[in-house]
Amino acid sequence: MTTICSVRYHGQTAIAGDGQVTMGEKVIAKATAKKIRRIYHDQVVIGFAGGVADAVTLQDMLEGKLESYDGDLRRAAVELAQSWRKDPALQKLEALLIAFNDRDLLLISGNGEVIAPDENVVAIGSGGNYAQAAAIAMTRHSSGMSASEIAKEAVSIAAGIDVFTDQHITTDELQVTADEH
Image (tube, rainbow, N blue to C red; front, side, top):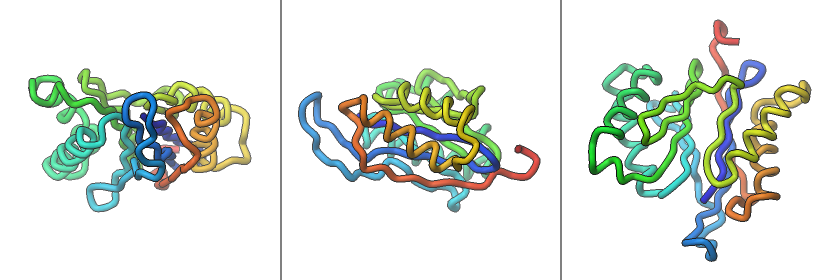
């Protein structure tokens, strides 16, 4: 289990995630897993929650869709979600993805959902609700913070509440294109 949080704020989109891998509900198998990656020529950043093997499968599929649609993240995400929902083998995959580029911030689920968040904040995983609430509060009331600082602090706050989230937090960020902020 894990917490991944992404924030679009002041011309940047950032993502933060912890490194905890849990076996069942009682054993921490690893504390330093990397659940944030760059794909499609380093133009798209993803974060995942759920089964690692399932998430890697979805990452590979999303990258293939990005190649097919010349890097159009929205189109690739919709095509991935449709495939995920329709294919019985893929329906068994248990993972959620956050994906963003310089234009879009999206949540992609196996239920066929591709969601662009209203508040420019999206979070997934066992501590996702805590991180999302914290990040929204910070975007509304902390003008001195960067998107990366907000995302990292939101995951840190979730780690203080959620036993399946740790303090080994990694981040990544991209600049937003000029016409989007």
